[in-house]
Amino acid sequence: MTGGAFAFMTTADDHRLEKHSVVIAGHRTSITLESIFWRALKSIAKTRNQSISELVAEIDRARGEYDPPPNLSSALRVFVLTESKSL
Image (cartoon, rainbow, N blue to C red; front, side, top):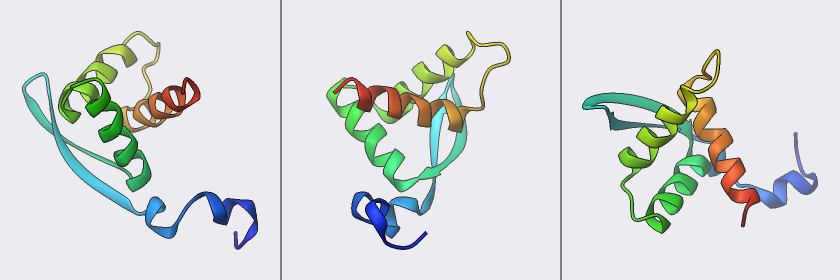
């Protein structure tokens, strides 16, 4: 897609995939998300006075309530979207 309204809302950097390591339940795991989602997660964590690992662990626990549970990357993206809607 080139141009259009979408080009005004994001930058090429927003789409760049970033891999981050976090600790969930005492185990280090690696998660890959677009940079725009990592920035949002960092902002949400800061607002809640949590570390990224604490926030991700919270989301990880909550996704276990679904049958079948979504993969962690999907759960993180949906969480960010849900949080942004409540602003």
